[in-house]
Every structure is written in structure tokens, then in C-alpha cells.
Amino acid sequence: MLKGMVLFDRLPVGHPAKVKMFGEVKRSLAGAAGEKRTVELLERELDLMEKAKIFRGVWLPYMDGFAQVDVLVLHANFVCALEVKNMVGEFHFDSVNFQFHRIIDGRVEGMRNPESQLHRAVKASEKFFGCKVHGTIVLSSRSGRVAVPPKLYPVIALDYLPFHIEKMVDVRTPHSVEGLEGLVRRSRGQFNGPDLLKKHKLTRECLEVGVRCLGCGRANCEWRERKWRCGYCGFISSDAHEFALQEYAILFGSELTTEYAYKWLGIKDKYVLYRLLENSTIKSNKRGTRFIIENKSLLIEHFSEIYS
Image 1 (cartoon, rainbow, N blue to C red):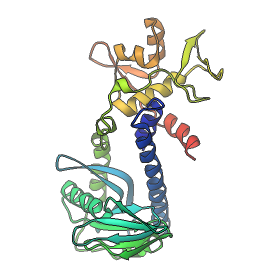
Image 2: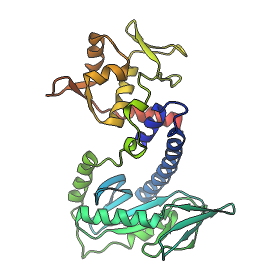
Image 3: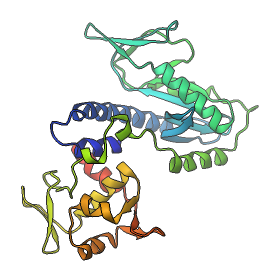
Image 4: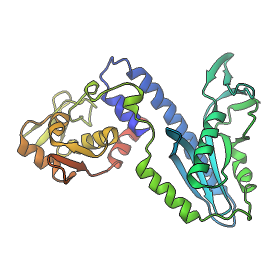
């Protein structure tokens, strides 16, 4: 989701992909809100002899790509993948063709089938963890109603979810929660979901470069008199480049060449560039390349205010 927000902001006004990216960001925000409510409820009301470990937004390898698990619950006696839907309307699951549509305000809208998404997540989880994985579709909005249920997996209202999960406990299938948790944490360093630039057929050349003004949001700050100065709103900052570096890292990875750093930050003087990169990056063994020190909190704080 953070990657989508950065990509949307860096696309120029009028770019053909900008409207589509905005739609993706909106859907991601709605999904994240539903996942957050789900996790908070489980942490508050799940009543188990041994505490479960709960993860949001886990990407696991599957076939030639990846599968996303909205919420993953790890327990000593079960593993469960949840597909969380924060949608309103009347839901119809086609158990013959495995299609899905909803009816809202009298309109019929075809959508990606949550059952297919969950099935992919369950299969990927079983292969990754090497054990049986339960699957459940969760309706996090009280304004959603199932008219025709799915065939393979149950659909549960959020309020009932803790009781549903508590029934999954099976003492005959013990798991090492620490071992499973270690696999999840390692996966987060290797599998980060789809490449949005490739998905939307975008290149680096499509994006606006430069240091963004954190006052008005425009990417037109200039480095003058040891400060970043916005020529549009007059905003002044000494460290706005750190935000721009985090944007680069979320889009392209932490490896940054000196050659591209000039372009991305809009700097021409090599001594100024080295001084700016000194505290935000570390040297690599490859000449002319540095690694950006991750600090996603800068982006999270900024976008939380914008999309709150």
C-alpha cells in the first residue's frame, strides 16, 4: 500500500496510469482498515490456552509469483489464513464457475472472487509452512450480506470470527509457533509483493524526480544556502532529502547508484551530494553505489496525515 501511495504521488498529473493508481490506493486503504479491525478484534477477544501470533499483509511465494495473505494466525495447534473483505452490498459466489459479483444500490458489479484469492493464499501457506492451513473469508463491514455462499471456504462476520477460530484448535496437530514465526519474518525480507512499476508498465523515466516539498507536496525543492527551499510555497527544510530517499527505496530497493542519486535529488555538486547521503546511506563494496538506510516511518507518518 505504501508503495502505491509513493508511486501515485510520483506520477505526473495527467499520466494515463494516475487514475488507476488512485483507485488501487483507495481499495488498499479500505482493505487495510478492515484488516486492522480484524487483528484488533482477535487480539482482544481470541480466547485460547496458548496465545496466537497474528500477522497482517504477508506475501508468500506461489507458482511463478506471489500470494498475499491478508491476516495470518499462527497457533500451536492450527494455522489459519484469512481473506478480509471490507465491502458493502449483497454478495453472490458462483460455485460452478467460481465467479463473484455483488449487488449494491441495484447495480450488479463483477469483482475478483474472494474465494479464489483465499484458495491461492491457503495453497501458498501450506506449501510454505509444510502443514495444513485453514481458510476463512471475513466480512469486516456490517453492511455486507452473503446471498449465495462460496463452495470451498466459510464466510464469517467479523463479530463471530474469534469463536470460529477457537474451534480450529486440534491438539493432534502440534506446531512450533516460534519456527513458523521465524519463517514469516524471513519471508518479509525476501517477498514483497508485485512490482507495481512492471504491473502498470511504468519506467523510472515516467516518474517525477526531485526532492518533494513536505509542505505543499510538490517535487520542486532546491538546495540553496544549506537548506531545501520550495519555490512554490516557501517551505524550508534541512532534511527533506531523507524523505525522497525513502521514496526511492520503497519503489526501487535500497541500492542507489551515485549516478542516479544526482538525478533523483536534483543535485549537481558532488560534494553537496556526498554530504547529503552521508547520514542516510551506507557504503557498499560496489564502487559508485550506496545503500539507503531504511526508515519507513517517515513515509508512514506523512501519508497517514494525507489519507486519514
